[in-house]
Length: 264
Image (cartoon, rainbow, N blue to C red; front, side):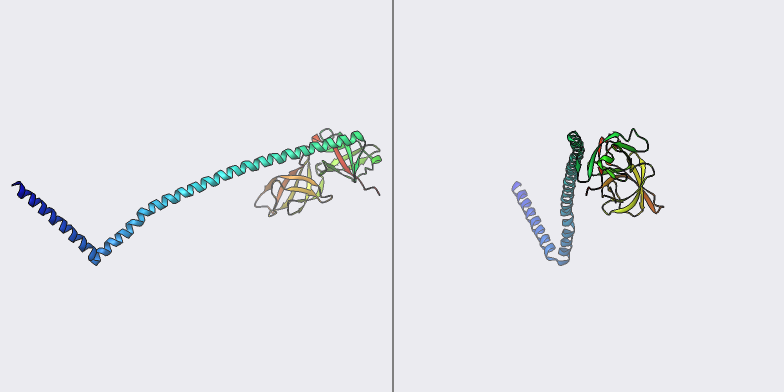
């Protein structure tokens, strides 16, 4: 009885295997069914592989953005460090200029080209109307109208009164004082108006290329008068106001240079 059951089971397995082979052969050989299966494979396969491709692309984009942000942070740190170094060098330069001036005065009055070094007797914070009093005058060739500079380049004012051994300087930033200057790398000509204590303002056309930090330079002598500190613009107005100030603290000036007429 058991042998007969085993034979029946083997016979059924053989029949099932033959049927499976026959169905597979029919599916592969029968053109409409084969086309349907092929289309199904083409539709499903890209979706499966596309998921992997999209994931890989997203990960690559994430890594790229991360690297770019990290590079920007490092670049910003380097730039900030460079700015700090430059600011320190500027301060050192002004301090060195002060020391050189004092040494020259200790050795005797020194004239460099057409400049005369002078001590400030009365500073801007002590005298009215933004004026300075210095310890050189007519005996050193100083005359009214002579330009006065600080640290070799920064224009601060001009001589308005003289005596034999002293002179009074009126600062360019005196309230209401007007001066012709140029602004920025495009040398935009403007009329600067003093606002007191080293501060100025000017008006430029609305579309003028002026930015905070631009240099303001005197037409006479081509010397730095200040740097733009802020800009006030209103869309409805044809002009905008720029505010600038001298690049140093005028209350701390201890010595200056007077540009006198060249000796013949």
